[in-house]
Length: 324
Ligand SMILES: Nc1ncnc2c1ncn2[C@@H]1O[C@H](COP(=O)(O)OP(=O)(O)O)[C@@H](O)[C@H]1O
Ligand SMILES: [Mg+2]
Image (cartoon, rainbow, N blue to C red; front, side):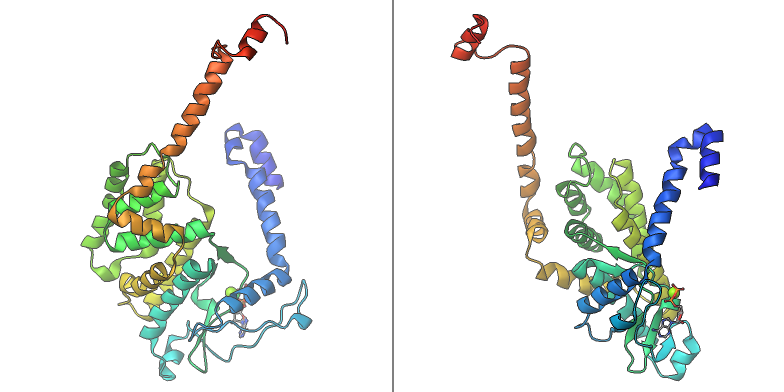
């Protein structure tokens, strides 16, 4: 904090980096993360969300033995996925584990909106029943409904190489300013998508794709949401973990069933939106209504401000003769 303060005071140019503010924020976050009851609560929520996910098991928390400084949870009897030799000795199908890790992770993100954001290999075990067991719940990510739907739509759009739809989803979700021409955005998105599809499919990284996507949308004045950024960063890690287990892991083929199933099952607005978008850009057509209404309101206010109230009203006459 002192260093941040000194830097900010001495080198005026660094003021815009808001160093003191950043350090303060880090302090707040750290305080929160240091309270193990919060981590236990995260594990508990994660466990509830995933209780029916076969092959995936979150250790149970023992609340009676958990406090601010102590977290008690089931011991994982098994092997860390870091120990590849051990995994082989136990005849564990590492290829299946690799694709399962990606699928579970994506499912938690799009279905529950709550995902493990520290999925490196030191935090993943395979227990003696062959289930994937995550530990270390200090950093979890959340996605609200809109981000969730948005994410599923853009990834799916990319898989289908339907750049126009990806662009329409950005616009419909209000993620880029409505003045951005849909075709220009689609073109920019194509510039990310196509080179990737030129590569051998197994080299495609969803995490890297999202990173490039955010870079482009930033150019179109879209502010990247921290939630999505966190997801993107974890995605890169998860894919790395999977590739270490099986270098041939095909990220797209692995992700596709989860995203497709999720999109089919969700019947709420954006899926209907995506249905609509498939046939026509109905929603996009309807969006301009709002600005029109705003325009009318604005016109009325301008009239009022400039004194151009319709002159045959009593109010106007009263005003003129100063009766009120
Ligand atoms: N429930 C558990 N069962 C078995 N080993 C565990 C368990 N929890 C933690 N460990 C071991 O302790 C290490 C550190 O725990 P972790 O929760 O990941 O803390 P950190 O936040 O310091 O990474 C893990 O990498 C793992 O080897
Ligand atoms: Mg850890």
